[in-house]
Image (cartoon, rainbow, N blue to C red):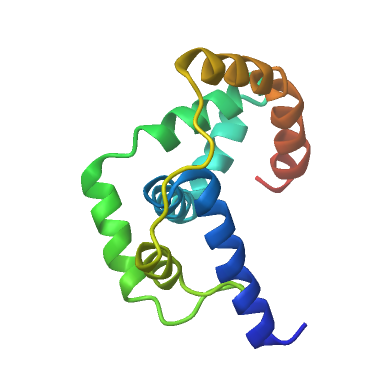
Length: 143
C-alpha cells in the first residue's frame, strides 16, 4: 500500500470508528491517546511499581487515562496542532484526524446502558492479570 493509500486508510478507519462511538467520543479517544503517548513513561513506572502484582497495572493505567485534567488535555491539543510529522508515517497527525472527524460528525450507532457498560468492564477486567504479565515480561527487563 502506498503512503497516500495508507494515510487515507487511517482517515477511513477513524471515520468508521466514529460512526460506532460517535464523533465526540472518538475525538476524545484520540486526544486521550495523545496524552498517553506523551506520558508513556507512566507505563514503565507502573510496570516497575506493580511487577509483583501485575493485575494492578491495567487498572492504574485506566484510572489515569480516564482522569486526565482538562489543563493537560489543552496542553496536548496545543502540541498536536503544532505537530508537523508523526513518528509513524502511516498515521496522519492527530489534530488533522480530529479535524476530519469533526467535519463529518455523526451520533453513536451503539450505546450501552450503565448495566451493560458495567458487565463489559467486569468481563474485560478478567484480562488485567494477563495483560499486566505481558507488560512485565516485555518491559521490566528493559527498565
